[in-house]
Length: 335
Image (cartoon, rainbow, N blue to C red):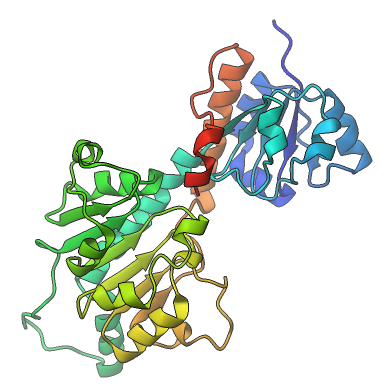
């Protein structure tokens, strides 16, 4: 039997049982030689330093310490980082790429629950479920058999902002429904959007013509406050802004102003700051539905990320190419 590559877990220790439940942990250890009792959360800690000195592979997740020059100097044999989460921007540095270390991410797997959340919210807001539930609770009844004008998802216009992993996955999930879907993304041309099966519009045109605008652009200097007072004013009265990307994409004060008037509604899984201050109007405005950053992998979904890493570990141990390798040249355009 060939010798397994030396590896170290580096993430928040409390997350390990969710990312690698017993069956997945056993599979991971079949491909990598690692001690599941050693989870590095501080690369300067003596046991972690000793393990890093031997490690060829780092298995990372949420809570991984930063891989700066000092950390990498202590890991001279490191050749691959397998990340059991989405974005790697929070812990990788230019030194990782300069030293030729391969990085793999489970971002594709993490995109699925976000897209599922967005799909669910699009369909629910199309039925105005949140407002009507509150009305039902207040009245303790409803006029049975009444057709409510303006409700429904047949032909409702959905504008997807950003052809990210999540944005593309959402477009796939929206396809079976009778919705009119458009896309805005300055990095795409009409031919590329055509391959996704949706019309490409300038952002302003998408905002003007969408009943629901769902944000899936990455957090970059160019996308900060992408949706501000001017952009919100373009949206039709009664439209919904859905944000599962990053809170910084939206001018939150401007959004609060619009939602307070009742002209627009908002479904927010992310805010800026996060969480909102206790006194934030978002908690009380009837047109705002706020959830605690749960669109991404949660509960039993987290093990899906671990499975991706197990499969990547098998490829690495076999000398095969990583399927989910991160291209450092695209990092600026990624979440």
